[in-house]
Length: 605
Image 1: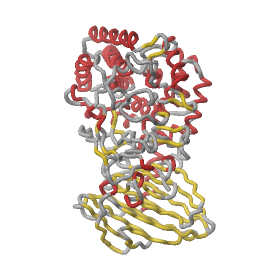
Image 2: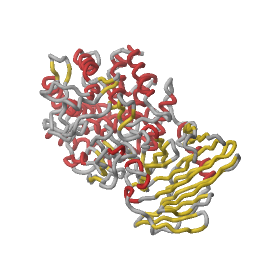
Image 3: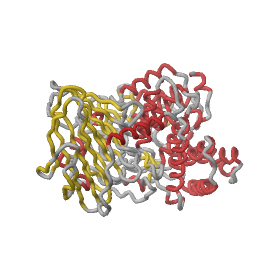
Image 4: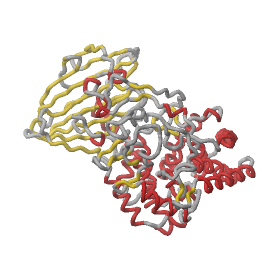
């Protein structure tokens, strides 16, 4: 039976990540990078497409799990009629090779267990050639990939699987590890699993100890920060939107996308979350990744890049994978990389402005790039685009896209004024005023008393909740209040916010998706800016309750089935959680930092 998305846990080594089901099966792992081909792809197919199971033979075993406090070390507790065993899963932060390690111990009695390793390279298609190195070691090779299994219990081959049945007794501890290396390399050295567990725990404890955000939501914030760190590709500082591809936004539907890339749209939220938490090294690494990725001709800037700044993210479908709960197609790559999305210009400018304000320092090359981007934006801001939600239908003059074009020039002006940077300020001020007037004239519907999704439309869009947060209008402006109230009337489902109504908006896809979790966090922020503190706290608590038992969030939530949907865990959801928690409780409030409107927020304190 397919596990629900929220039944999975994340482990990772800051270069790749695995999803571990509550049944002890690792059903997703892309090696050696987040965006590499999966060697465990059961998540999007069947066990025959690759997994690594260690679990009790008893189908009625009780199962509980947790992360060790302030770590990314997962403990799954199996309780049977004969005893209790604890499975510990982790990936040591990577130095040379990538290791996936498992340890099982018996707390009392004895437990009969089954192990099954099915390696399938190339997204679940390619069966590797397995050879024994010694009694406890085997090597699997297919093309460029090599994985080495080391096990302290016996195993044998059976139907192109590596299997083993064993009994663990009180006081015993068995260890297992998989190590990835290029197939042309020598056999990688073995690491002691127990020693690696200790060093991994120390690493995470030290990292968490640097967190400076404190308040009533500490546990949720820390878990989100750990998750964001785990989604970061350490060599470059790029943060993937999620470690998965094609987990559906609507179970059984076609809204299945590859999120193993880095979106410029996440830039400002990422920087503020990291800087406010005290993680300046990570914030600087992200800022530097952003500058490298966007470097080049301004006319060729993309909305997303690979984890090393790769530009070609060609989308194709995998015919041999049936999809999560038959949600097809399974997509690799993301064609949205070639879309025009005007909002990313504002995001880049805002992020680099916040980096300067936050003390990350000034880079002359960065300012040169920003000025070049504005020259290009001046030529194209009047064009329709695909917008923040990357629609695959007709381009429109999306209101939020125009607002973010305003943000781009606004932040350039502020950076130049604050840091004495050169630029055509009068021209930028004129453009800023022109765009502002254009949005207020064409993006606002007086009859609805609300801004609209795009010019000439009467539909709404949750991205409009960001207008006060980015400083376009003060939160107490009647048009902002009206927009919030209109979204409450039309886009709320079971107290949560749709990004738009897919039954009324032509986005080029069949209708149907869950509520987009980040949008509900934006509504919490707006409530605070409007002084509606009780509504803000109530909705935030509701959102925290949607996390799985380990504190993880997917991209969306489906209220009718009460399930998480979309790629998992989702950086955008966790970034929104961290920033909203800061707005609620921390001395540094991202809503103030971005908007510079403080009256409404301070009135809410």
